[in-house]
Image 1 (cartoon, rainbow, N blue to C red):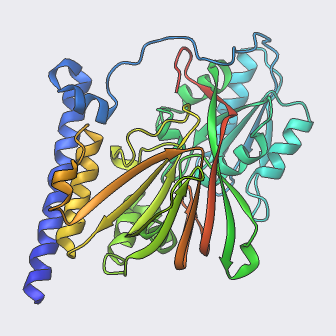
Image 2: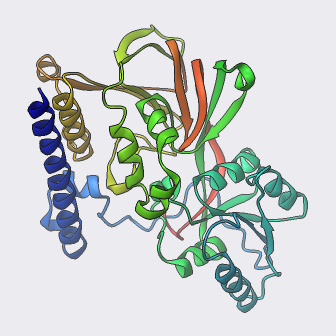
Length: 384
């Protein structure tokens, strides 16, 4: 049977390589001539031009004396240079000197953001990875203070879903200072039955996705050294180690509707649906629709099922969805539901994560959406 596993692993690697190559080529073609690609691919790659319409819900304050506060993770490279550029950018626009506040191990940004609000900040900018962004957002949710983002992390999931220019610091600073302001949704995860019980009753904000199952195992198992060297690809290697894990049994209840009981590899609740590498795991998820998108993913039959599941994720991102007839003969499936709240009861404790942060194990969690709960700085004229 060893040769079967070798053959399967080889097929999986070739499939991944072929997919990444095709996506890269399509993206380059689309940047030069979007009309050269089918509509589904343009949607999947998000290269179609976005109409420059005013952001809905909130208008940018015309007061050019706005006070900006930067909440900075000091462990990230490039923060010293960024501070000089931020000071200069504010000075040439005759803005007040920006606040520059560092996070700590004890407080990754929530307390600092609240202090900045109390000190009169009109815009609070999270400088760091997904953890810093989530911590700052927790302080700003429900407030009338806008949040900016300068991503310096590995995944930068929320920034990717907002289509922020990750590699262009100058453009990011312009968005923070001159960009439009839009309202976006935020998700909240309540842990009701935790193991150990220290996290029981705790509540956690998420901006992109929360979930239980192999996605949380992947987050918990990612090697920190590989993350620094390989970026988000480190999560792929962590996931491979759990391909042989048992499927979880869970009951999913959306908006107090009929419970759905099934076996699955993972269950996700999404505010946004894009992953690193351009993968649209949940294509219909939107940060402005006031709903959570719930997805259960399952794979059977070893590497054959996992390869098929990966192909389904790529296909649905391009607008090709499974039909009920085809599902009967498949070794994998993806089921979608939508609502404003979801309760997940698992037969045994499973790892849980929010936006790439492991929260330990739990057997019951609840997710809910706070529609329009966060003001966010985006490129001028663009609606998320």
